[in-house]
Amino acid sequence: MLHRLKAALFALAAPLVLASCLFVPGKFESALTIHADRTFTFSYKGEVMAVDLQGFMGKAMQEGMADAAKEKSGKKGKTPEKEPDFTLTPEEKAKQDENFRKLAVEIAKEAGYRSVEYRGDGLFWVDYQISGTLDHGFVYPYNLDNQMVMPWIAVELRGKDLIRIKAPGYVREGGKGNGMGDMSALGAGLGDMGQAFSRLEGTFVLTTDAELVSQNNEAGAVTVGKDKVVTWKTDTNTDDAPMASIRVRAVQ
Image 1 (cartoon, rainbow, N blue to C red):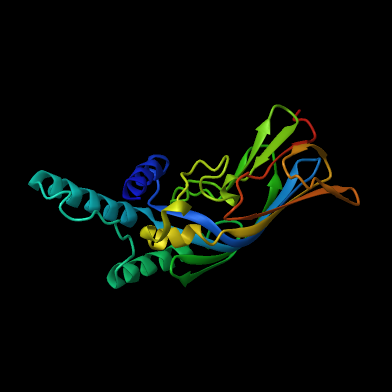
Image 2: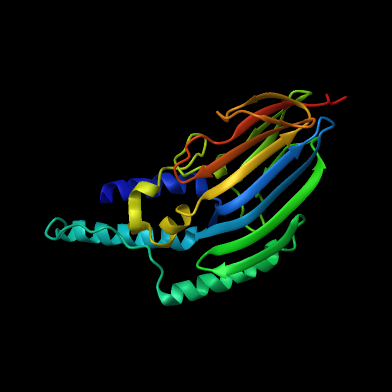
């Protein structure tokens, strides 16, 4: 088990070298409406779990240095190898809570955030909604100043009239298209980080009056008036990231 944990730590670190925090959805409701004229509205309401990667990787490095010292001294193998414990000490937790409270204040200043509340233990409550025109791509969340560098959902412009939606952040870590290693199998050894990955449970609704070219929900789309509505329900057992393609008014 320990060698799997160490391997996962290195796999996790590779795509996250730019981030000092990792943000993952908890319990949430999210919706995206895209009209044929390219106007859109996106919303996310619910929990956001934050993981202090700098502190987490610092603990991992300490464990690695301790292992190296044992190996050099010839003591390795004389005692059973135990899994590293990444649970925060009370002092580390107090410092983390202070930093996260400050982060909530900063995030709340950004466009689209109607409410940001830090509730402790790495848990934020967020109410976000933004509208605009899709003459360029859109991702959420993404903010370099606040160290949000791994979006959960991306809306891409493909050619002159096609829009592709993909929400890799709305499925379990290790799921198809997520880009993360599967951390769920590593259990309690991840401490607070493992708990962050365990809360995922939400609904993502796509609504459009444009041509729905494709989507990957087995239940398909439901017609409501002039709109096609696709609803994905996700949790820690969900593998496939929500995906869809929509044909809208062509860019002139």
